[in-house]
Image (tube, rainbow, N blue to C red; front, side, top):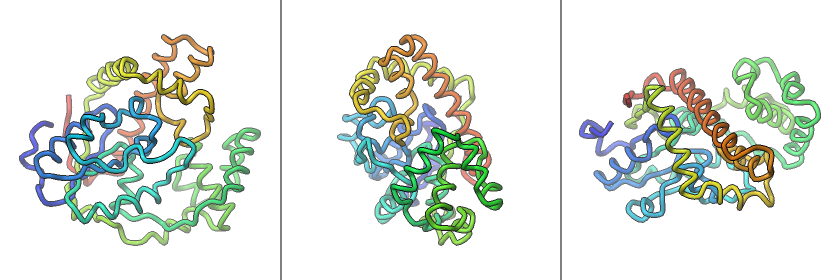
Amino acid sequence: MNQISGISREAPVLIAGPTASGKSALAMEIAARDGRVIVNADALQVYGCWRVLTARPSLADEAALPHALYGHVGRQESYSTGRWLREVVPFLAQPVVIVGGTGLNFSALTEGLADIPAVPPEVRAEADARVVVEGFAALRAELDAATLARIDPQNGARIQRAWEVLRSTGRGLAAWQDETPAPALPLSQAEALVLRPEVGWLDARINRRFHAMLEAGALEEARAALPDWQPRLPSSRAIGGPELIDFLQAKSTLSDAIDAAILASRRYAKRQRTWFRSRMGAWQELRCS
């Protein structure tokens, strides 16, 4: 993975991979070689409240090389794939390496993204209230068949998103997706790399990294979030955040919180690997072990 001699010096470079697989280090190496801007494609590293817990580049890294779309969103804000795509497109006019673990962002960039109107706050509030009382199953039961066939029936966030689109526009998410425009960066015009780590190697790295995060101040980040903690905010999905909040609220021991966070990270990495296998078959694989 340290051998970058075969990676294009001209084409935009895309680096996807599961959490803790070494994406950021590879991006730094390529950016330093070519004079590129490192652009974030991770849905949680956009939040300013989580530097340590989301493994955002350090202040030293940001000072050493130009970085973009990191830590620029407030804790209370929602941040969509559509907003990310609008923000990333201007950077394509210069040499870039785009790096992250959010597969949906890369799909939007290289395959196109449907121009779905923003969901009104009152519709989101209605969905939130219904989920609390009825669960995601109630929203799933109201979706159209075409949309149901395309989304993960166990993914509550995707179910709610589809329901909100249907509720606010009167059209199913699948119908909007069928009108997807041309991609901003076709895959054929990029150097697209996906890291494929050996599972045991990655699990060990996840374990070590979370303990390093604690030493670097992850618990202090969680403590700063505690006074206005809202579990359903997108920013609250940062892995390790809910677990450390549980400890700070005396709902668990620190040891149990650490174990739960590491387990959540491993499960998230497994979901990422599944996505990459199913959706990134045309990307160049880089093995790590």
